[in-house]
Image (cartoon, rainbow, N blue to C red):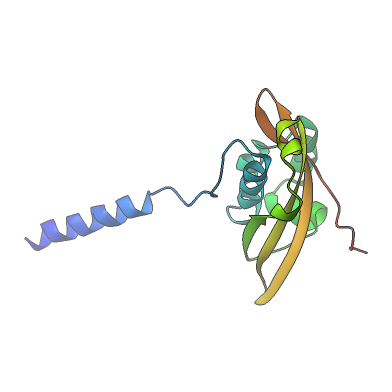
Length: 145
């Protein structure tokens, strides 16, 4: 009886561990949703392959040259986090941009690095090809030195 109980508890733990992680909320066809998935893959999942699915070939070449997600985010994006929450800045959203093939998406990053709270913001240029949105360029931080 104790063996059956142990097996059931183990199976429950395995099933709970296999549940898909939380995805960002929102309409999956919007540029903001894709931009959030991209940065979530880089910062929270530390997975370059997932991030590469959401970029244009030009940006993919640049990303691959850095080797890892952490190298890319530290050197090109110039932001580092131990954990981060990513939100789309809706204050500048224009319906006209969503229906065109180009969009500029502003993202707000709130997280921690080495125990200190870090708030930052980045914008990305996006292109729509064959009905799917891709990140084409990460705009540099205008306030960086």
